[in-house]
Length: 257
Length: 241
Ligand SMILES: Nc1ncnc2c1ncn2[C@@H]1O[C@H](COP(=O)(O)OP(=O)(O)O)[C@@H](O)[C@H]1O
Ligand SMILES: [Mg+2]
Image (spheres, rainbow over the protein chains, first blue to last red):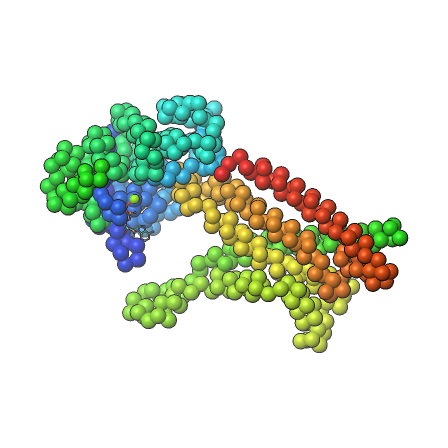
């Protein structure tokens, strides 16, 4: 059974259709890369999966269980959406760390609040230990007590990844995680993501780093104008694209880089 | 003489502090209300969007997005910030007597009450703009980050955005509050014995000017204390950006 099954997702902003009939599935432990030019709807798709936007049509199922069905709006209560969100994690292009908290506090805040409000019985001690372990895994053991403004962009993004991992999502989404970084800082973030892939973290990565996508992804989706133009193994989509639009996009890329 | 002047100015200073404190007490919460009002997106005619043909007309398109609460708050803020406080004070104090043949401010502390009302309305409008700026200056990404981490709206507000708003509100708020200290001297226009009036009375009756300079000392002390307080607050909040 697929860990994620997305069927016929559609999203409009006013009269403009931003996503049209988006369907794909993802297996546990696999990495999906989404590529496509800017404005093609990649961010909107990730925002739909994280319920920051509500799709106008379609269904989302996690481990075979439908958690969202646009046709059944009554099921979408505030607390239901919040519970659904915990299946997904999202790492933003612009990090969005909480400035008034240290790196460690950023990582553990949501877990602490969840433990308190749902009385999960999880001890604060355990949460802190886990947060430290995550930051350690991100190579930030000496930065735990720094505030975001004291960290470089690459370090901030790694804290953001640890923060998302702390909620133990089934699927971790990245929206151009290195686009806001200076070129010399992208490497450290990509390295961390590679590490997660090696540990079979299920991930959806929107990226413009073609070499990275080809390397790390098990599956690639090329989007254009709100539709999936082509999907398949990276060796097919990136190296031997079938569609003309994919070819054009990729050739523009190899010229740029 | 020095003692007489000091005592009189102390009384004036008391009046100033009373007006200052009462104005803050009421205008700080009222300003927050006005800020929420001006950000309200309640559009009672939004149902018009159900008839797309109607929306082809400019008027109906405008009507469907018209938010009356926000509109009203913005107009009030515009009028109050666009006219002198002194004018508002005169209208609020003398207006009712002239319009209704009955001075609603004729009770014993009526003058002070009228003055507080005028100041509260005026400062609530200024504060509302500051609040709104603070609220809107927190990037949407902060809310979204909280939401994708499964936090409730309450948790996001209290644990994430509130302190960021406060940090951005404190500097403009401290400016406005310091201006309020000096604006209290406008109360003399409706014959309230605040500091400047006290000092000026000595000039008129005794022909001496030093009490005027002496009043300045009182303002400087009050403003000085406030400045220290706000600096302390800003320093407390300077650990993050
Ligand atoms: N909140 C919004 N309101 C209106 N249009 C939007 C909104 N968000 C995105 N769009 C539009 O949707 C399209 C897809 O945007 P986006 O998902 O950000 O693309 P990408 O991430 O691939 O660059 C763009 O044309 C964009 O202008
Ligand atoms: Mg995008």
